[in-house]
Length: 209
Image (cartoon, rainbow, N blue to C red; front, side, top):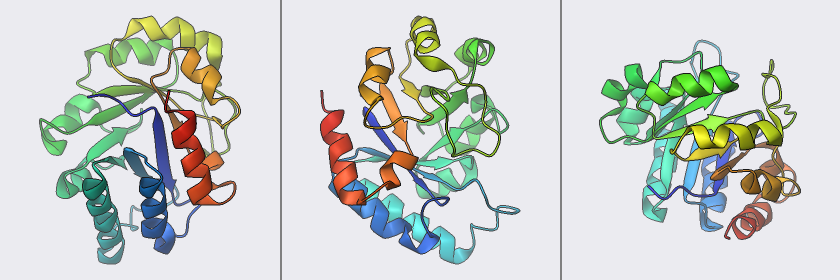
């Protein structure tokens, strides 16, 4: 797949659940062609009530209409139900474990945080790899050590799969991240630092070339 350079993440840390669908519409209308749903602060995964699932189902439908890839964080089972891809962390199922659940054609992303994890991911059936945090981030309660641009450049040649950089990436430093070898930049907090429609449009323009 040709991987979109702007990878926005719908994160319920920044958005009330009932604002997810309008936010998804604004981001997709701005031109995003991949969108991830992320909810890290739930208890017992109870956010996938019937009501919550219906909202995420609406987001999946919006992505299909826009020709955008929809990704569900952590949950391969929910991703399969929605015809979506799944993004997995180091504490989740491995891509090889999730592949039979998500389906043979599903997009699977896999987070790595250091060289050991990055090299180990080479044997996993992931569509793309993520590396980070590239910079300091406040979107995780216990973030991994910062990777930095120099390490990003060093690790880039170790895979021929799309590489998504994540962690503390803003409109001010995104170009340096892309120039250091990332195919795409995942964006969370910077996306919600002002008017969402305008910021999403800025990101699409910034990553267009």
